Amino acid sequence: DAGVTQSPTHLIKTRGQHVTLRCSPISGHKSVSWYQQVLGQGPQFIFQYYEKEERGRGNFPDRFSARQFPNYSSELNVNALLLGDSALYLCASSLVPATDYGYTFGSGTRLTVV
Amino acid sequence: RKEVEQDPGPFNVPEGATVAFNCTYSNSASQSFFWYRQDCRKEPKLLMSVYSSGNEDGRFTAQLNRASQYISLLIRDSKLSDSATYLCVVAAASAGKSTFGDGTTLTVKP
Image (cartoon, rainbow over all chains, first blue to last red; front, side, top):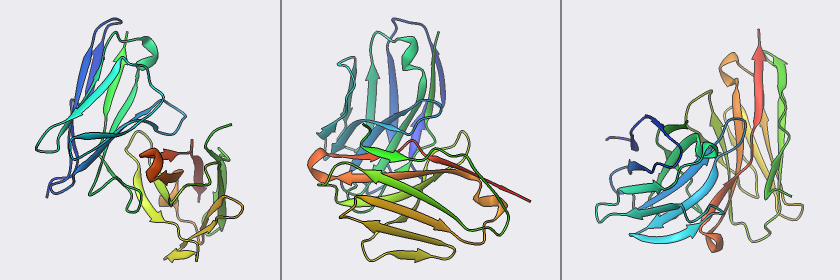
């Protein structure tokens, strides 16, 4: 079975541009969460989706948006990129919203904004 | 104040040592607790869940004190391969999220 798949693995964007990051969860998993991790810090929660509905949102500006598709894959969109958006973006897959079972993470998308 | 706080370390210990990490959390409605391990420039990986009764997995023991809102991880007989950052995670269904600490870095030396 494939694990959590994220694409692209690396990305360089210019300030002001927008970016779309993609995630395919483990087969059978219906919940996807997105996290941002900057160097030296733990992952910061951005969104959680379950059964195509948003179940949680972190303290990120409206430039960040996401959605989950009928096949449970997900996209994270970031508009008007800032230098501070440079980070590792992690997608976490779980059977249900992971309050009991923990997550399986993808290997992440490393975004650099220049 | 951060929702989940960890001593960042670094902890530098010799092989075979016993080392303990602590974590405190502020949301008393938290329901589930975990330790993750993250190697340099890699994704976090679930190490173990943490239960009030305490639980053990080989050389690793996790403890939860709900009254004090405190979680711990004990590693016995440290191996070189244990060198990593250990992340404390607290989950609350009401908040629809799991909150990560900033991690404690462990380096095990020969």
